[in-house]
Length: 360
Image (cartoon, rainbow, N blue to C red; front, side):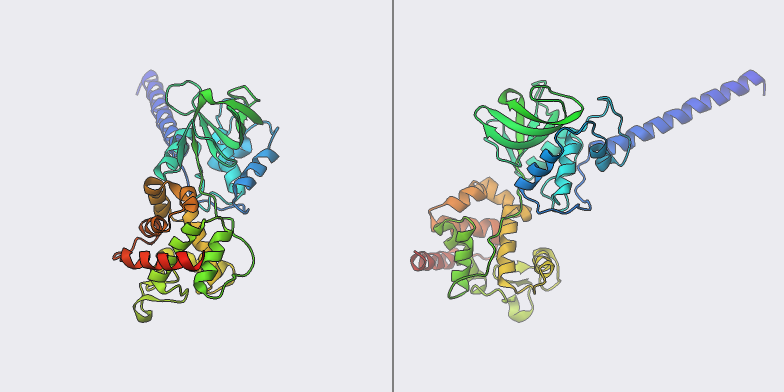
């Protein structure tokens, strides 16, 4: 083969190989950048709205986003504004609190994927919503209907929202290479992810003369109205006679517990998750307080189906907790949480009427 042709072959081969490697690198990076990863080893933490704000504020003034980017991607951070890392900062803070492992906040590097994750779970509010501490804020700098920046809400103040953000540089700047507290006008706010943080349980022993009164008092202590608590206890009565050790089918299952979680018979599903929670506290699955605490966890986002139905059909958990209508509360809890095959609502309403009178 002539020398020129030989060198030309090597040159062309090098170009082809380089193109293949470039496409492979772009494909790999894209798969990371545009995928919200939910399974992750947690750094621990209590997993509360207050904690993620505290963790984020502890990073205030940090220059450069390498550790946040590398948490999501492992490596590859390029300083100098070339690598966007606002979403990586939110993800890093969430992981420090154990919220990635719990599925409360996604591990994401794309603002669009973060928005999509919250919308799929009916945990999204528009720009006119008044946010709370720990909500995840999304911005639209170009006002083109597409989010391009994200951060963590500290609090709302009049027409402004005070945030802590990565990949910014101060109160009014849109971008930068620092973690900073910002005061944002609503003009560029696109919307909010509203994570369902784990329930805050009241510590101490259950009080009451029987399991129905214990459940009612527990729910009241955790912010449920009289009517809301009555509606839940009425469902417990219909499901298990308010017996945390009740096993359906004469001990065969498939359901067990005060609200009859499935699948006891195969040691899986919601029952297994509840039993694992009790075991993490050193308790048997029949422990009543563990079951009541786990119910609060499921209501606050631990069971995505419950949350979706509550949000879509009944105004969300906060509306449920404030209701003054015990019959409505009984129906809403059955449809969203119990989802019984044969609900026998007339029986549940009867129990609700009895508890409504008893606990007044």
